[in-house]
Amino acid sequence: MILVTGGAGFIGANFVLDWLAQSDEPVVNLDKLTYAGNLENLGPLQDDPRHVFVRGDIADRALVARLLERYRPRAVVHFAAESHVDRSIQGAADFVQTNIVGTYALLEAVRAHWAALEPAERSAFRFLHVSTDEVYGSLEPGEPAFTETRRYEPNSPYSASKAASDHLVRAWHHTYGLPVLTTNCSNNYGPYQFPEKLIPLMIVHALADQPLPVYGDGLQVRDWLYVGDHCAAIRRVLEAGVPGEVYNIGGRQEKTNIEIVRTLCALLDEWRPRADGRSYATQITHVRDRPGHDRRYAIDARKIERELGWTPAETFDTGIRKTVRWYLDHPDWVARVQSGAYRQWVQTQYAALR
Ligand code: NAD
Ligand code: DAU
Image (cartoon, rainbow, N blue to C red; front, side, top):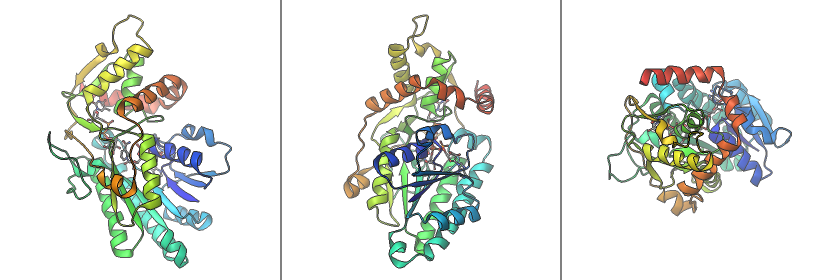
């Protein structure tokens, strides 16, 4: 049994689905179901006894303690977080609460549980913390990609809250000996990603004949990794990672935002042409830049490749085709996640950027 937090979100749901497709080891899935959590992502597991869903907050230490006591997982894989940079700029309170206070509460509940285990169980136990490349700050053009020893320079409220959680996780290992593993991954894309993030937002806006809002000059660079490859990397780190170590995960697929948007437009032009025959690229609109916008991220993934033998299976070209196809094939999922609350977010965020 493993305990997953945030398993109704984008990466967490992909992880749980992939996990149970490859193993019969059950999963307890603790998720608060914020706006970003969606049980529909776990639809294929509805009647599957290997998946136990619990709605709850990682900051609820008593609840986490009860779950640990009852299910006795051999590992915790911690995805739960507030994850959207633009939301953190509008207001950081939820980010501080979940990403910092929540991770602290989770660590404390896990530490108490782990300390009481039998020696053999205690040495096999793992706490895997899923973090981001954004904690390293921003790269200049031509600067080498982020390694695990890169200095932390978080620039947004989101990345600062993730950096704080990484430091807590590190300290719980150093001070208490908790067997932690930390992964810092680059930008993910793929099925079930909430359409507030660049790739699904552009697909959804394109199909709805809405403007495609590119921040600033659109020349910011991100290093894109297909979500299934991230999940495989996490499984590998859980299996063979050395406690206390940090592993960077990335796909060596650096792209500018404008390249991404043009690629999406070209795929949609081919697969779902606009009624008037014009390209979706005519919908591209440059809007005001994100405050404090990091210019470039890139991951040096040589450590995980060398030490754990992980490499991504998808290139950007293969992964983006799967992703666009998935959104075209799941209009009902898209319609349902676009709740009233989500529509209000889009209105507030993009009206201010015009
Ligand atoms: P997401 O926003 O899609 O999902 C987050 C999930 O956490 C949701 O299901 C939400 O309901 C749940 N959650 C939020 N607060 C909670 C709380 N207090 N208690 C319990 N559950 C709570 O996020 P994602 O994109 O799937 O990211 C997952 C993790 O991976 C995050 O820690 C994020 O920082 C990290 N990460 C994301 C990316 C990316 O590109 N999306 C890249 C690297 C790292
Ligand atoms: O690098 C990993 C991080 O990637 C994760 O830790 C975060 O959880 C995840 O949200 C993501 O952060 P980004 O800020 O890089 O992702 P986002 O999809 O919000 O934006 C990607 C780029 O596209 C960024 O440079 C901002 C730009 N952008 C985004 C949106 C939503 C636009 O130009 N227009 C938009 O409407």
